[in-house]
Image (cartoon, rainbow, N blue to C red; front, side, top):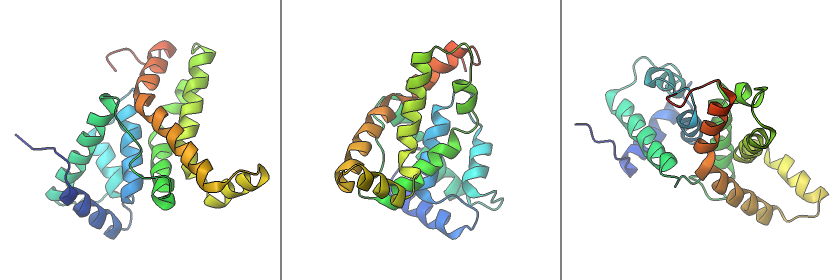
Length: 192
């Protein structure tokens, strides 16, 4: 049986591979993307997400595939146990931005369909919109966040820490929120 425990060696291997492959997603983007597709009500086949993450690398080594599978498994375990937290601290600006960019890329195949459903109740729709915006918040340019803080007389670091804490709260329940919206919308059944 294959071992899917994600280790520091896997992370180092993937960070090196993804940064050395021109079309591959950077590691933090990959994490956000995997989080989003794991939360997807439709499910994404492994070949599809591997192609996206590796940038279509047809020569991807087996060790990289297994490391990506271990990362996917690790994120899945944390998502479905309700224990997922953003993998970066609020001061890791570049990594958080990349994570949010990956997240926003990963929701593209299901998000619009859910929030545009005419049968989805307004409360659930607003919860989905708010939580998605919060998880995508760090995709904004740092200059945009700084301009907002300046205009509202808010200290940048404490504002980012607050946004990070709120995003963590949403992250823990995002998969359940997406599932509830998917079922209520009638676009997906409870089996996926």
